[in-house]
Every structure is written in C-alpha cells, then in structure tokens.
Length: 276
Image 1 (cartoon, one colour):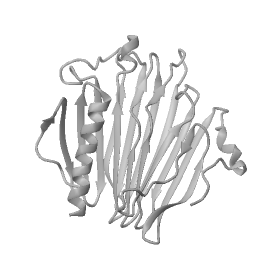
Image 2 (tube, one colour):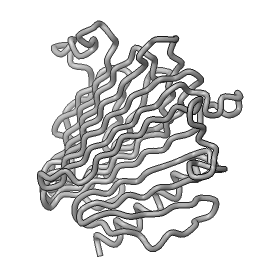
Image 3 (tube, one colour):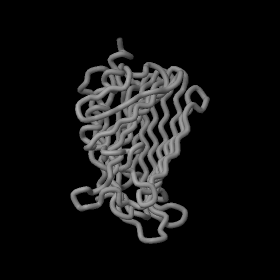
C-alpha cells in the first residue's frame, strides 16, 4: 500500500485560486492478489486516512477517514474523490460528525465537492459522518456519482438540526445539497435541496415534523433492490423507491445514531441479498 501522507509536490492543493484554504482527499482502490488495496492515497489537512482493514475476510477493504481539525469553517473548500477500480470492494467511513461553523453576514460559507466512481465489477460504499450545522452556518455540498455498467455504489447522508443542547435547533442560515448520478453513462438521478429554516421551518407537517434528523441512503448500479414496503424500525420511519438502476431510501428519526443504525441495517440486508 502507498504511504498515506501529504505530497509536498502538490502544495498548491492547500490553497484555492482565490486564496481560500482547501482540503483534498483522493483514494483509489484496486484488486490485487484476491483482495482490495489502495493504489492511490493522497490527502491534505483536515483529512487523515487510517490503514485499510481486511478483517471482514471477504476480500474487501474498509478505510476510516478522520478530520484533524475542529470542523468546517466558512472559508473552507473541500474536495473528495473516491474511486473503485474493476474488481475492488471499498468501504469508506467517516469517524465523526462534520461540524459546520458559523458564517458572518454576507459570507458565502463553506463548500464541499465529492466525486465517487465505481468501475465494472466493483463496489464502493461511502458512509460519511452526520452533518451538524452550527447557528448561522452556510454550507454547499455537491456530489457527483459515476457508476459503470456492472458496478455498484452506496452513499449515505445524515443531516442533524445542529447543536440542540445549546439551543441551536435549525438555527443555521442555509444548506444547499446537490447530487447528480450517472449509471452506464446515463443520468439517473438529479437532486437539489435548499434548506433555510428561518424562511421555511422544517418542524412542520409535510417536512421533518417531529423528527429532528433526516437521512438518505442512495444505491446505484447492480445488486440492489427496493426494500419492502414502508415500515418502521424502532424509532425511525423510512420509505424507499427507485428506478431500474437506483434505489433511494429516506429516513427520519429523533437522533442521528438511530438513523445511522437503521440505514446500516438496510445496507447490510442489501449486501446479503447481492451476495446470495
């Protein structure tokens, strides 16, 4: 495995064109001698990449990504690129929540751009930590998914209302979350969500209602199926739908932990179905 450390020859990655601080994470997984390895691992602060784990014994690899800083600040411009090459089976998890700090009036806020790619015969699973937007936080997240014919990819998102214990429930200024997914070269899903609680409260019927945390589980490519009809698992409510080559599961719960447990239970069921 290549060493996971900042590359001084790419120092320009630490600053964007307009001088804003930037963090970069690039991981590429390949199949070698019957198991998945990292053929490329590049990162700058605030990302830290742990050693791949093969404890599951399936030939796949799991990687934990940590944030070495306290969170995402208004000037941050983050870039993440994860690729699974043919035959690779890679799971990438975030170790902790993504905390988004307040932006001053008139500031555009922070940006995060994520690119996910799964080649033919590969599987890529990306499970980042939940998003915790602080009071007055402004955050734009863009995700681009590319799945080749014969590949499969799973992606999760969990949104919390903020620091509830500090009286900051839904006190962030603006969240914009964009997603575009292509499977076998065809666009199968485009989503754009803009949340501005001061203008359109989330705690009303028809939106989040009594459930403070929301999650989405996206499944693209081969090996997935729409779960059984809408049902409850403990304190979490969820529903699912999709098309020929994608499935979307929406989840609502009172805590991020409950949403994540349900999400991972559904994902495990999907994996067992695919392997069977």
